[in-house]
Image (cartoon, rainbow, N blue to C red; front, side):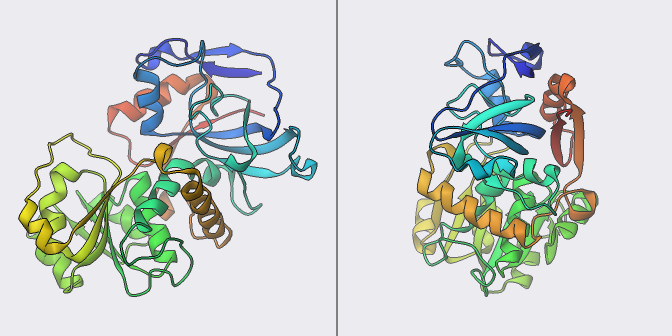
Amino acid sequence: MRAIVHRDSGGPGVLRLVDRDLPAPGPGEVRVRIAVSGVNPADRQARSGGPLGFPEVTPHLDGAGVIDAVGEGVDPGRTGQRVWLFLAAAGRPTGTAAEFTVVPAEQAVPLPDEAGFEVGASLGVPALTAHRALTVAEDGPRRLRPGALDGRVVLAAGGAGAVGHAVIQLARWAGATVIGTVSGPEKARLATAAGAHHVVNYREGDPAAAIREIAPDGVDIVAEVALGANLALDLAVLRTRGTISTYANDGGRPVELDVVRNMVLNTRFQFLVLYTAGPEVRAAAAEDVAAAVRAGALPVGEEHGLPLVRFPLDRTADAHRALESGTVVGKILVDVPW
């Protein structure tokens, strides 16, 4: 089979296309023929970070394809099943940037026939992160379903990004009023296409006043991508006992807390990353996201607010360069030929 690998940490240039033996699934595992591989910022961090932990690594956490073999203890009836994968390369050398990969069976989630492989490859990290962000409030639901967020107001910071896009879609599916903050008209168009009821340009006028006009009692949950840059706005619009769910700090601005102000607000800060969220949390999120996919609530593509930027397998390094450029709006995917 053909696979992308790297043996050292570094820039996109460490990625190489090679031929490798077909992997065999072990007990509790499935082998998946990959159709589309998803690229996330976490994949860049894993590639460019510290020691690999393995002599060779195939990157990418997310993807979609068809199960073509199962290991001991896995229902043989799963062979031929369309699936989406999450955390494939987490603590393992077998990511989705390859014609085949092997993952634990529970990390291969059934993908309905009506959902394309590009949808499946766009789930994983963004959708599960969004689910976590929406289910950590003190008085909020721990699971998502239609009606779970009725009466709540969700603010999706950076509503045109992959996680922000999933926050908008999942929050709307669960019944919330959704506000997206964006930096310009084009991203406003995308956030609206994703399903945001309201969009506020945080670079114009008084964004806090605009959000308060929509939500006079304040926002229940903020899904935050740039805490250092946006904290002042978040606190200006957060309701008492509201939650700020932080999954990134884009821009890297230091975070300074006014302790007394947050005490008075009873602010809940939830910092989150999937790796350490725990298996029960991830399993529940995967179940709920799968239900949303079956309901048609998580479409992708420009018309749904998430443009797709696609590269062939042999140009995976270029996909990483596009991600690192910071100029790509939407989801970067790698197509694996069948």
